[in-house]
Image (tube, rainbow, N blue to C red; front, side, top):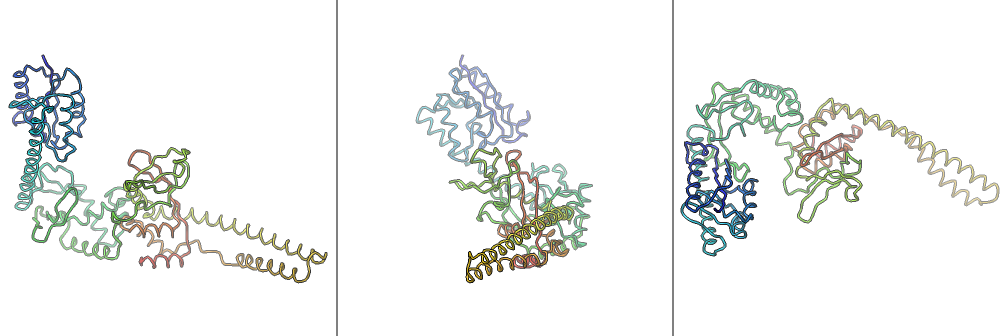
Length: 504
């Protein structure tokens, strides 16, 4: 008796139940097909919640295709062709190539396809396109049905669960009711109170309320923009290929779904006005067209201490890489700038957007500045003593007849010029290592919203503040900022720099 594999697949978990035409019905039909062709089913492959366009992403499906190479496997049994695949692009047709290369047959209750034959291959390709079109129609019908429910009754899309749900808000699909969830809702109310009372540092609001964790200012910003806290369910955008696209005025709509609201409409409108005013004077996030690697030149390897730079390959992939790695002197992992930059942004918001952390870094910089100043003064004093000794030796050489009067005047004049410069350095006032409190508060505000600065502004501020970071890549796709060092510049100089950048 020949052996075969039975493939059962449903796109949604609900279709797998015994009361639906899902896995139980498919199992029964596959068993009948096996008996009709005299096949022994040696493996049942059940895929629950797997779309026909994503079967190649499932390791069980890939393992089934690999097993077709075994000589004793005659083929695969399915209820219908759509259970095998609903191709979304031409790469998906390598599923059919696996059948053609191995000579495995595709069994169904109505037909048997041998992909080694041209006519069967043609039928399979045409059927694949038909299934792809059917999948698109299903998606359009589902989307339209959800849109009607949202527009008519303010009902959230089915199957969403908690994903995408605002903090402190819940929706019960059985009762189709919205509600607030405490104590999370209390954190939201406190965030609005702090913001309207004058605390506009998002990181500080996050620390006080526990919203978003350390340094995630975007979480507080998202809360302050959410109309559901006024009890209003507003739909003013649609999702296209994973990106939010604003709707036109005629396509947008809203429903009052929770009463009483968590935040009054007047307070919410006041918060939106403040956010709009701040946004008008704040540079936006960098676009994808800008150069990669915001932190190239400002980072060093946490493993070996070498400088980290940005490396771009022929395909345009840009990543941070340790300077010692190409020479095999360091085994530190590299990471994409696209993945690393947002993580470093968050770390800087947490470190430099905190008054306590910034003061600690400034104290360390002051100590380092004082040590450098003392060391520089000692070096200047040593050079002065050396020049004075040379001046004495030149005069001794003149008295001994080595130099004439003109040579003496020339050499002594040069030495006197160098001595005058060094004495001027010694007498010059010491650079003010203190940062003006007003500017220090401005610095904290800048870094608390660091993610909203453009690439050029970030790099100029990093250079002006003399910031250096030590980073490592402990696991794939994650970067860790192990330490930050900041230089201290005099208040007047810093004020000019910030004014030049348009930061008042």
